[in-house]
Image (cartoon, rainbow, N blue to C red; front, side, top):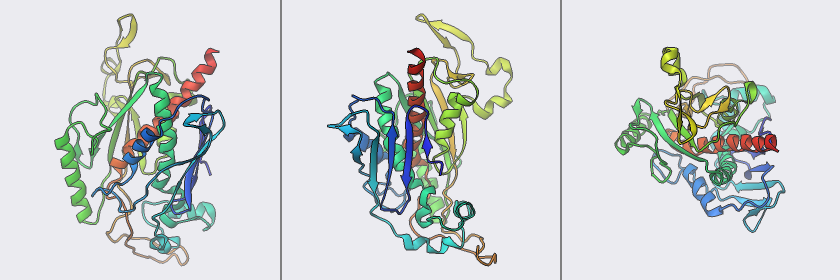
Length: 356
């Protein structure tokens, strides 16, 4: 399985949704870096359901066990391995989907790929549960980036038809619902509740901005920052699209409207607008790196859906029971930060190699 990422920071995620544990190994972390484990736990808690009405009823503590790679809270240069025990599993809920694939899930494609031997309980290795170890790695990278003066902020830009208002200018991480405009956040939660009451679900868009990036990170073509971040972000289940800067809206602009004029502020080269999202030619230009990711509606819904039996190829309508998020977007916000932080820190390590 393609469960590894990184050129300088080698990351591998392992486990399944209902296996005894899930986890991550991280090779390439510099030695001597102190990691605030309490702060890391707070970051992981943002991804956990936490009893919220818009989240799954599955309750997992998501407390990582650091098996190696750290001594007294400080990295020691050895590969770091961390795992999270799975404790609240109900695998019986998923027994029918071994032969009747759920629409919108990877049940069918996994069955084709692995000849029917895949673990379908909870979605197996395809589950959003695997974003917990992603957040371990990303939470560590966020702390390391901050020491370089680089910070990531994010927000829910929209859920269903409801859009946030105002510009993303500061962190929303301490908010119960991470939006700029709290009134719009309340409207989003109402939309989620309405969809849930109808046995349905909603998707949305998450926006992230990376502040303090130096110019010169990334490479042209396949090593571009867009490519690196998109590759990491697309590892998050349910992500269906990523755009940078003006993104798809740039297609409707003229060059005179989309180009970012250069200027100098306090001896530093800047652009007066940021339609490029802080990246030109795959390389950071020193402006905030801005991207948005589209997250599809949770495919597990209570409404009856049409499927087939893989053994007989006969029609087989189904209803998905169990415990599922009516909207995965709020819990995906820290996952987006984590994915971006991993990609950016990997690029930062590459830049350090080039300067030696």
